[in-house]
Image (cartoon, rainbow, N blue to C red; front, side):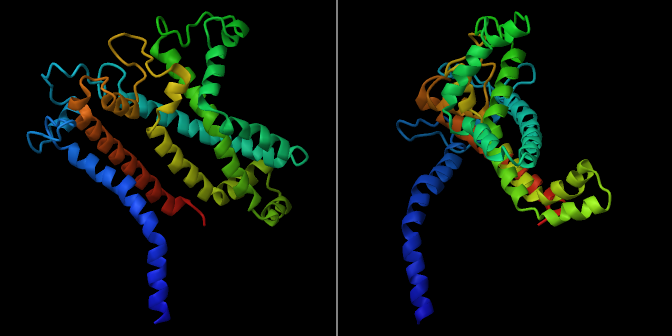
Length: 315
């Protein structure tokens, strides 16, 4: 009887949270999935011409849309930068580099005992700094007459919307993403290093193992849970990249009036929802289809990482 009463109390305590999740998480997900299959969906009237895979075909560039109200589709392209290719590039460049740099920094900070707290504070500062403020700093550093061009005697229009290339803008954007991502990763790795028993290193030293070998055989395996966590969350964050572009380049940046060179998938979704692709009541189904595609991509890569972790992670 007491156990049954406790179960009811538990469900009562959980009820407000479950209600909020149902309204603000589960319903939007379900609604997005349904809308992604509605052809000619009008968000202002809630009408459509029926269920179809047309939205997915259009977003992926398989079928064309002859509706004059739809002005562009930059989600996928074989011939030029697109939301999909940019997202993939950002993800597979910034995540491995940021993880490796963060791990190296954490190992270095952990070995400097006297100034450990000081360096922890210094490296954590970008994490609590507004992304717009960091973007302004990068804008000054990589401006036409900025510090980078001055120090290295260059004349590269890194971020100039009228003359910058895709490569120069993407280079600065990746640096920006890596820089803003480092503090959190370093903090997680440092917490993992604190939990490794010093006796492992003492035993390795007795056996004549070098510091590099001890890190390879002891530190890395014992940090594998943190490496897995950081990798999974970093991939998810990178696939959803949007705020970094806005923080660094501004909401409407484009190096060409007819295309969006630094589009990402989330940028594409936001533009569709805001009516940048045409009348906003005509394109929400494309935003929904793109959101579902992004969800599937993230799910696939997360499952792959978790599958690999079953053999590589030491708990």
